[in-house]
Length: 384
Image 1 (cartoon, rainbow, N blue to C red):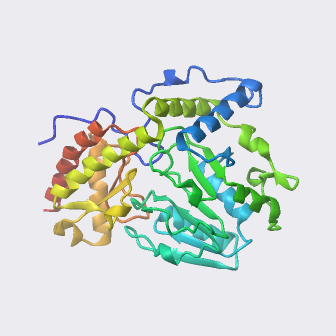
Image 2: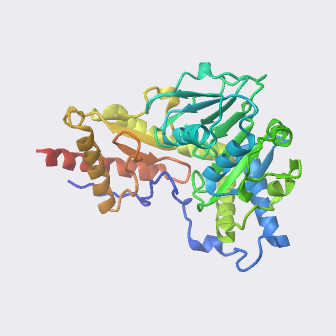
Image 3: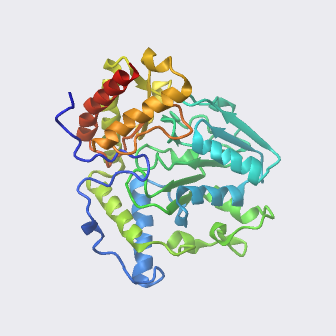
């Protein structure tokens, strides 16, 4: 039987993610439409995004935070192309996006001194093998694997290299230890449910020093350039964006930040995402045909929560048939209008991926669970 209760909001996509509870287009009523982002009020709104983000995340004094083009991808690429090459670099990956950064560094930048530390989906590489005299690039949370770093103790306090962290599905959901990092990036469309195309780039003083003292000799496109002469272009970190931002997206970002403040800031956001994970963890514990993709509970993501089917009737199928099974479960939930966009990421093992960030209500997670059970049973029956 189909469940009677439905999630109030069926948006469980891992990006762009659900809007905050109660959101409507009316929230964008103060958008600076038809005005230049370089006008005094335009720059004030961009600066407000920076200031509110710094305050909620607890970004240390002396760090710069700027709004950059092309979402988190753009922010990471700016850093890879501008900073890497001064030292050897350890590239750490255990899912799709980290693997993408390895491709960029080895096949596009073609750096000479690159070590890759990788692991299969569901696992972390040996982080103790990271050499802190080298630069390191890693994702804080593997969006497509549901696996996060448990802590940053493997990064030395007296490191000589830079610690460069793609934190797009961790920022505003996990307690980031800033002293262990030098570069942190994220995007608006993840934990706070903002609109896409804009990225955030946070630089420690050590990262700024690297920019100002290391010249790779590479030609850089305009949207990657963070220097003015030989000095950091401070305007980028004061609301003078490199390219034209959407003021609608800026207003939406401000709405999300103000909502985050209203629920207790980072602590409130973390409580909400942990409650979402707990609801699914309780269900997984009592269900014998599903499990988390993450092998170690200490590395279990609270935002991009990835599930795998463990029923032998499914695991006995070929890889293609397992993929079709998972796609069928997701399609049934989509057709019923109870869960959109929760199919596993295209490069990941077959299963489901449910966003548990702070904009998602735990009551919606709880209402979704019986529907997953129903869709799973329907697919099992279809196997004959």
